[in-house]
Image 1: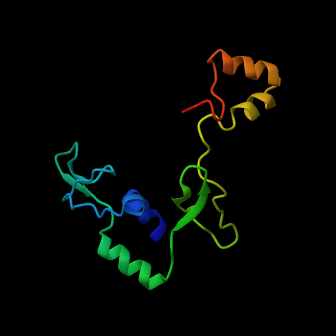
Image 2: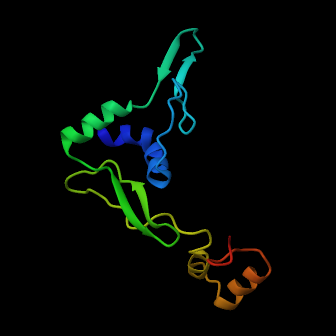
Image 3: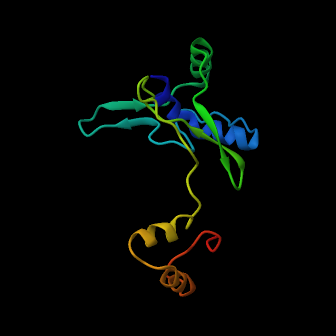
Length: 137
């Protein structure tokens, strides 16, 4: 149950990891997650949606003795901290092998599996039709 809840605060954890900044409280609003507020429903009632509060999350992490984040090697950041796979089941826990690929990183590989040869792929890249790893900012 902890893993799905952590996804609500994952951006805050990433911001803290990268900048060391502890964000100021924003009441029932959030600058990084949505929805997080009180909303009026179609039938005139209200519903509140919110992520877990930090103090509750900290107590839970200590109680279960469990880190949810994994560090993965990244060419630009050294290590990229990411939210682990959920759910992690005992027989099939799943795992993250790498962070998201760079823009264009697998373009040539995908196009070659579709039958395009290296010369055609290179021409498409020269003509600006596709971007290849290293060509894309």
